[in-house]
Length: 412
Image (cartoon, rainbow, N blue to C red; front, top):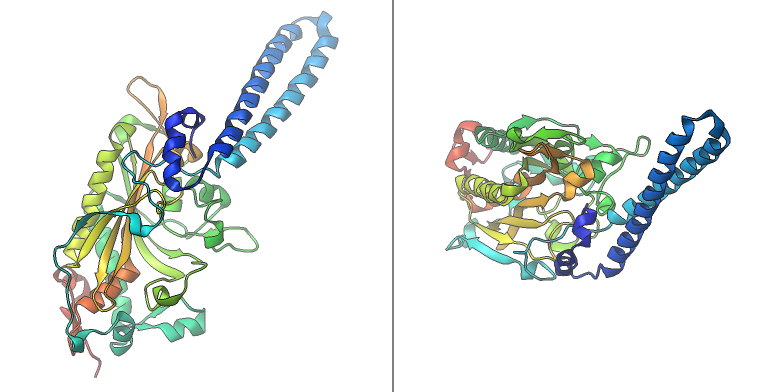
């Protein structure tokens, strides 16, 4: 959530135009409400001061009673206008960073890095991952349909082992870089979902329990970032680095066609996440460090990849700047997103009231950042396709000790 101070700056409205929506009217409403809020607050403080003065005199009992009623009425008005203002504020997305380009869709994203040469599979070794998963008895998509529905695969045998091994490797990699591991709940309450910006903007994509109203998390970012909600951090504690594995649940409303084949797009999938809280003075250095961290992880899996800087029209609601990582699906001959690394600046921490004390003892909002390190389904898809041979699927060297094997062979 943007602060009123940010909204008052003309640069914010200019930056928001990068999202291809005119927010002039909503910003005008917010500022008009803020003026009313400030006027009511001024009246409340004046009446409260007069009441305090009158309360000390027994002769002013009648006047004090009238003033108490005025205080009560003004407090009610203040609460109402603050709620009205908040309900509008949460509909406003984050202001894009100055480096974010104008653009409407993924085709307008900037490719900042790409491997020089894409792999070309021989015609006899060009099965898509869903056929390889069936051939090597790794994933049972039909069983998932039977148990739950489309988008809920069942991992079997070496497929389950590969899933578990990748999760452990990703966690180990993050922990070795100084990230503290957490194992959070997979369901969160409404306040937590609002904190990171999933609500109200992404409510249609989230699963919700009927009785309690809990939301199944779409990413570990949601519970992990909220760990520090309503907390003041000492400057010396920054940066705070956290990592977590969770399953992720997304309705993926509106998805169709080839994009949903196999592991391309699921309703439930596994992901390892990294989250950082950073001093605003160096949060973009932190973002660069996180991008490098994820890049080295992708490189260790020996997968062809590229890095994109997203345009304003393709960024998430809460992000100020996002880099996407895509790996190349050699059998499908297309790029698949496996990670987004973002700086949210104060957008999330303003909602969650996460602050730090600077060297002068003044409280400021910290910057929050997060990234996928990594999302598993498309990593698995690309690993299977890229490393297939007629009778086995070779494994990247880094996975040998985790899998206890160098390749996945056909069951005889």
